[in-house]
Structure formats: C-alpha cells, structure tokens
Length: 460
Image 1 (cartoon, rainbow, N blue to C red):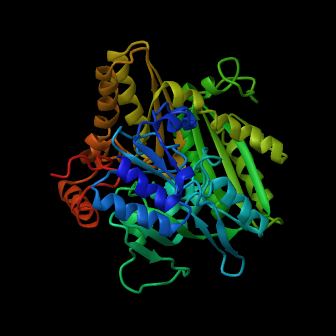
Image 2 (spheres, rainbow, N blue to C red; image 1 turned 180 degrees about the vertical axis):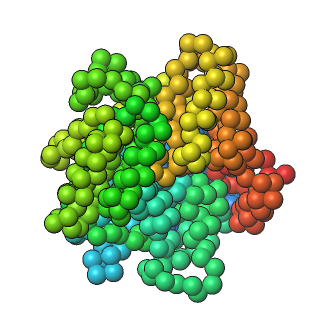
C-alpha cells in the first residue's frame, strides 16, 4: 500500500490522499448508516488527475469505488477495507451556463442544489429534483439516473443529459460532451453510463439540457376516500391541467400519519383523517389561464366527490409546507427497509394488498408505509419491524420483490441496484439482458476494478 499511496500522492497531492483514520470521521450522509471502510480516499481536482489515478489503479488491479454525496439507498457506494475511494468533491465547478442554447456544463462534484440555483440565476430551470438535493452530486445522480418529484413532466435524469465526459477503468478519457438535442452521429455512448452506477466508468463532466423557468406555480394537497378515487383524480388532472402538470405525489395514511404530528414533525392541514392523500403541482408559463385551469380542476373534483378536501398553497412558504409532508422521509431512511418499485397504476392496489398480507402474516407488528410518484408509476414501500436479523430482512425483501412477479413490475424505479437488489435483478431483467450487461462490464472493465460487485455481482 505504501508504494501505491506514494504514487497517488504524486498525482493529487498529499492533502488529497486521506488515510483510514481520517476517512472514518467523515459524516455518513442521509442517515443511511453506511460505514466508511477503505485503504484511502483520493480527491482529484480535474479529469486529468482522475485519469491518472485510474491508470495507476488499473495497472495495480486496485479496486476503486466512486463517491458522490452518498445519498443512495441501495449500497451502491459500499466500500471494503481493500478499496480505494475516489471522491469527486473537489471537481465542483459549473463551467458554463448558456441561456441561448439552454444548457449547463457542470463538473461531477456540483450538487443538485447548486445546479438548480445557477439555472435560476440565469433565468432557466433545472428539471431534476430529489429530496437529497443539498448533498447529491452531478456524477452520482447521473450515474444512478435519478428520478424525483417532477418526472411526470420532465422525465428521468437521462432526459436532461445531452453530453458526458467519462473516465474508463484503464484511464481512457471518453469525451462525448454533446450540446445538441439532435445528434445522430453514430451510437449515443452516453446512455451506457447514465444509470450504470459507476461500474462502467466514472462520470467527470456533464452537459445538461435546461428548461424554461415557469411563471406560474400551483400546489394543492388533496384528501381522498380510496385509491380508486386517486387514480381518477390523476386522469382528470392530466386532462384538465395539461402539460403544466409537473407533480403528482401520493401518500397513503400509513405514511401520512408518520409524517404529521403527533407522530411526525409536520402540521396536518386537515381536521379529519383520510385513507389516501395526493400533492398536485402545476408549473406553467401562461398566467392568464394556468391558475384558472388548476382551480377549475380542483373544483370539479370536489363537486364530483373524487376528493373530499383540499388545501391550496397561496405562497412559496405554503408550497414548501405542503411539500414538507411528502419530504418527511428521514425516519424511514434511518429505521425502515426501503424499496422503490414500478408497476402500472391499475395494479398498485392489488400489489399493496398482497404485500400487506404476506408481511403481516410473518411479522404481525410490522408497519408498512406506502407513498410515491403515481404519475410515473413509481411506488415506494417502507417496512418497519422489530427484528434486525439478516434472515428477517431477507424475508421482507422476498415478500416485496416476489409480489411483483405477477405484475411484471420493476424492482427499482429510481434508486438503482447497488448491492441490495442485485440478487433480485432477474425479477425485472431477462437472462439475455443480464448476460449483455455482464459482457459490457467485461469489455469496459476487464479487470473488474470499478465498483466491483455492484449491480451485477459475480461476472463469471
């Protein structure tokens, strides 16, 4: 290790090679309790240094785990005592914001919040938004193809990426910094790395496609008597609000009551309790009609008794207050087993019923909370139970994932695979698909040094 450490120091400087005693004191992000355990943490300042570090590690068959904000929930950044951690925290510059082309070029260490604020300062809108916006970094949320609360309108992260710069396992720098919406010049290589969780290459720079900043913003929290009513509310909102509909977040009472007082920290704006709630958000650029469309949609839903009550935000502060209820997830992250799946909205009720039945039969005292981005078919499931044994945790995983099989659902909607879900990848991917993924990994990283074991497990 001493020889490798000396060579790493030559590349990035002594202050940027942190040894285990220094690394263990680094804050564990987002209360995931993921331990930091590695030979060293290396902090390159630019792509040239990243490439040099990877060439050295490739030559020495040294495993490397890329590190961003570490806000993932699937152990995609889990480390071992023999790993080198490559943190891109010092590569945190927004290199360019082009208001004419509506693009942003950012280094991998820029946080989502910084990107959002830079776009806003320049009169544009950064379309990706997740709860961990203050900590998650560009390289991380692109490499996991993050989703979030505005997918219904703007799509996943990959829909906002025009170009990438990536360093491969052997130190090769692949520069594909495309700036154009239209570019069919051969293979679109960036798609290989978006969502690949750092197993194929290390993202160092990104060109984002920005959007027009909205001039209207409406948010309402509505309460319903059944999930069937919620589905109709979503259909009506799409038709009546139109393209301005940017968010549709559903919270079942199993989640809602944990977020509001007295169990949670948020205020409940309703006097009564209901089985299910939704946050409806619209963002548009037609002040003369957007507000009326939003209010007319709510009024018609109330008249038809599809919603039982509604609270409409009248200010930025009130909008933040309503969204804070949906964002109250730290108690889940810290204490529960957390899952995110995708399936058709029409199958959600049956899937929930099956999970409740299976988990309650084996863990009678368990609490199963449901919430999610129903507008894009994403359901989050969080299971709190007293047992912390590995066997019982595996049993909960089996119940959640095996219940997806009849519905042909996806085991990961937006969190990725990491270590936690790799055993269940065949639930959502065919043997031929997994074989091709392994072939790509073997081609781009023949020595299996980049984030080894994640997503695909054993490559044999």
